[in-house]
Length: 213
Ligand SMILES: Nc1ncnc2c1ncn2[C@@H]1O[C@H](COP(=O)(O)OP(=O)(O)OP(=O)(O)O)[C@@H](O)[C@H]1O
Ligand SMILES: Nc1nc(=O)c2ncn([C@H]3C[C@H](O)[C@@H](CO)O3)c2[nH]1
Image 1 (cartoon, helix red, strand yellow):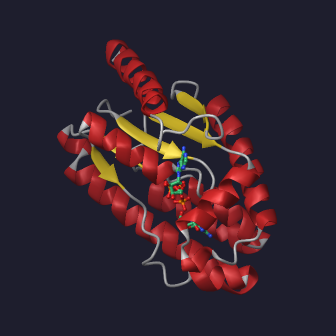
Image 2: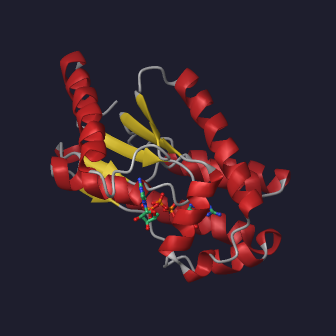
């Protein structure tokens, strides 16, 4: 495992990943890796008709994240420069397993492993959860045009899929700490104490890692 801190913030749509990753990047002065959204030409159509646009959408996200991670590896991780990201590459599998039919998903999974198996893995994960109500409110407040057709059912199932994936990941990778945060309770946007609480947790996790290394 790479030694330099590589932190990823994960959780369902609109839970606050980019907001928190940005705050942590500012506080720790780590490089910020942000996923692309607006550049995905298929995402708006995907929310209008998932069956029709799923393959293009999932492949676009996968290829784009592969290229981002490759650059991060070469420019930062291999040069011992820490990174905080607003996604973990495994989110591709969470989304794709929801939207692709089984035969297509099988092919997608193979391509995923070919592209990502030798990519750097984060060594600290922050898992943000929030109720469906909170997610819907935040997505609405953010007001992205392409997300106006997201169905609450899709979002609810996605949250369940995230929980299952995190549980499985925790069992498979007991060496990678996952910091669980309740996004309904913690308002790191408006409350400085809440942000400080998270920063303290992350600081402890970084220090624990470095003493073990
Ligand atoms: N803890 C919080 N309390 C209040 N508002 C929040 C909180 N976290 C995020 N927000 C607000 O919710 C909206 C969504 O946040 P953000 O874009 O960071 O979510 P995200 O998880 O990165 O979304 P996506 O999955 O689409 O990438 C933003 O308008 C942000 O200001
Ligand atoms: N289908 C699909 N597959 C992905 O891998 C994926 N990753 C993110 N998203 C959607 C969620 C937000 O609307 C927006 C920003 O996260 O993009 C995805 N959608």
